[in-house]
Figure 1 (spheres, rainbow, N blue to C red):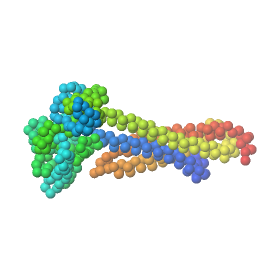
Figure 2: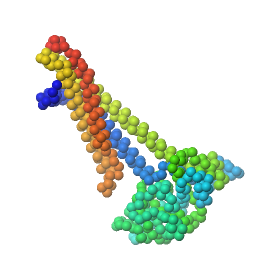
Figure 3: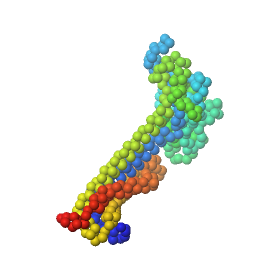
Figure 4: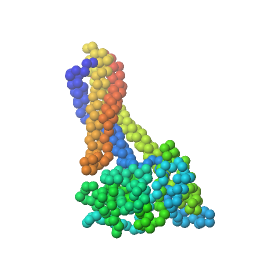
Length: 417
């Protein structure tokens, strides 16, 4: 069968002969493709949003903290509060050589709220003290200036790195704030950098709300001595952190007369497990997306096949006449399959375009300062693949009706009323 202009006109005439039936049949395919595209784009966007929360955070990290004990140990009763100190840093470095970086952190949350000022502007930040090695745990996104260095530590320089929110609230006029001094309560600090990191894995609040000081300076200003609130440690390349977690807990716990098996009293949070869990979660989500999308699409294709069977039954006499005047089975086959492909392809492409339009609206809703924060759109090749799937289903949907049409004998068809 030649696909000339008359053939296309005949296909369109057949499809539009019963508009309501064709529309309802095509809607099943349209909805299936739309669901597939929308779920794929939405899943991609959700994954990107979640990954942004973990952006810059080392995946092979453990966080050690001190909480109220839940087990008695060496004469100490359970329910005892304890704290880590700076000596634990050296203990971990010596006894757990698999660790690459061991970073102490102290916070101001136990000392009440702090207020930061610059001119007439003010804000309430969270203050943290840490070391330059912190960049091995959470990679800063420096918008201006630099991060802390060893000289800041050794000389206890009154310098600070401010988060994105702090920068926007104190320096509303914009521009590079490095070299300018801000006042936190009664102490002045020179701004040496602006960190635009916005990750969701943070300690004592979001990164954008923090002012980061050299830990040696913060120990002196806040009279914290050698006390440490949290310790973050990263493993060397190839080290599986879950294999050394118990040794890390034991190293810190024994030094403070805490039961090494007390996982609540001496907690060790392993981010490696969390990243694996997130990865497995999205593998399951992707499988579910394809299952639901293709299942809906297949249901639409079955609907097309059923309607084409009805159409063939209605056109029995017409098909018989075609056979009588010389139409071959191949011509009949091509005619029915072409009608099925056109119906599914038009409905499927409409579903793709509608899905892309919805995803584009989601992207616009997640745009800030002209920059798209989260990409929901499917790729070009994904759309092509969806179109290929729709065309294939169109062929499959037309096979059964075409076989039914080919089996019609001209004499029997001429008698059919």
